[in-house]
Image (cartoon, rainbow, N blue to C red; front, top):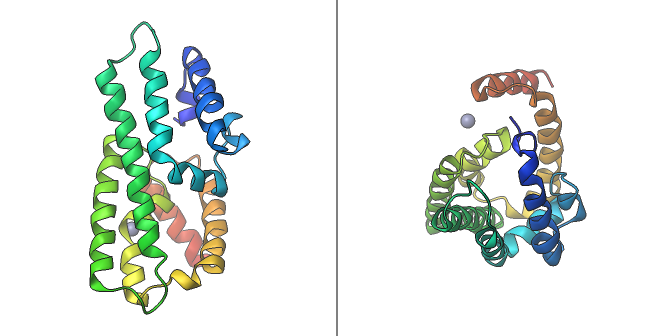
Length: 192
Ligand SMILES: [Zn+2]
């Protein structure tokens, strides 16, 4: 079930408030607080301000009086995990952006540490597995290593693969099982 569908009626005002009081303050795109997905610019802002954004979300959630609400310790822990995952993903991207010919063995190691920790948090937060997330956390660094770095080839190359990825994810949206998704995607790619 998608996050949006799983949000019950009683949680909607909370979500709206997070969007209008916190995300809006950091110019995290308006599509965010109309319940849409974040665009690339908004994601950059969210990642760049992850510490502040999640501290503010935590403060807001902790201030709520709500029947059946989890304790403030849990709120703090979950917000910290989100914050940490964004910082780790930012670290992974910073390694992937190193230009061709420049990465040193330490960069791969740093990237691997980031991806390992990010994958662990991803599981703990029960975030969905998508083809992009799988490739980012399982294959991107190996590919970077085999190309000897590709940060300077990224713009067009990545934009094009994003568009292909978006199209593929759209086609796969109704398939719940991750292995099945991967198989359908592999089949699509082999005929395209
Ligand atoms: Zn794979």
